[in-house]
Amino acid sequence: MTGRMTGNESKQNVGRSPFFYLGLMFAAYGVVAALAMTDSVSQTALYILIVLPFGLVFMVVRAVNRRADANMAGCTSKGLAQRNYVKRVAVFTTLYLIAFAVLTFLSTNYELSQTIRFSLALLPGFAVLGMFWAIGRLIVEEQDEFMRMLIIRQSLVATSISLSAATMWGFLESADAVPHLDAYWWAVIWFLGLGIGAISNRIQYGTWGAV
Amino acid sequence: MKNRLKVLRAERSWSQQDLADRLGVSRQSVNAIETGKYDPSLPLAFTIAETFAMSIEQIFERG
Image (cartoon, rainbow over all chains, first blue to last red):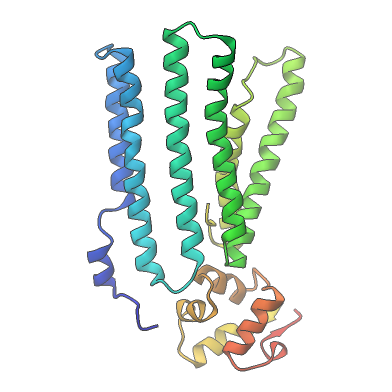
């Protein structure tokens, strides 16, 4: 393949590691957490500060894409599906954080009518639905059948874990054996299940997968 | 399913990435097929056979 970069060229062009920007983001959230715990800023400023560091996700996406371009040498469409997926997840995660911050801010500081509370409460849910949609599109758009199989496998593991946990917790909750858990946590468990699915892929097929 | 992918690739001095680029798949896919962890679909098996200018039966066998 004539267009492949050498190792040195790749190093020159890929720029900073995604982990650099992730580190920056976590450091920023550490500062925000410190400000929140010491009551150094107003509630409104805090909500803005919670959302702002998430802009670094776009830097992470750009860094990941640069590395993908350098490694793939633009030869297959595999990279395109995964790049689209990363962009979509970044957009919906940002929308989720904004919606969650707006919902928390407004419901804490204002007396809202039932209709407005209902509408606002739907917003973070729609953002999470967007993340599910992004995974669905990745499965549809992924041209590499092996990678597609790994994504589906991960999704099945995640679905099995979250549905099993939800069912067991529901019965335990009915028996007053465990405290109430808001239903949106099952989506969080599902995303954690994707991680367990990736570990399962690694053990059985020697690679983590694409999600 | 057994296959002769590694030998055929070595005969041509192709790396896994070289073959992956020719097939339009990831290097991980080539590795999984080569090590027998993943059996390719019929369309991909045909593409592999065409890449090596051989028939599918000359590359893959039941195992």
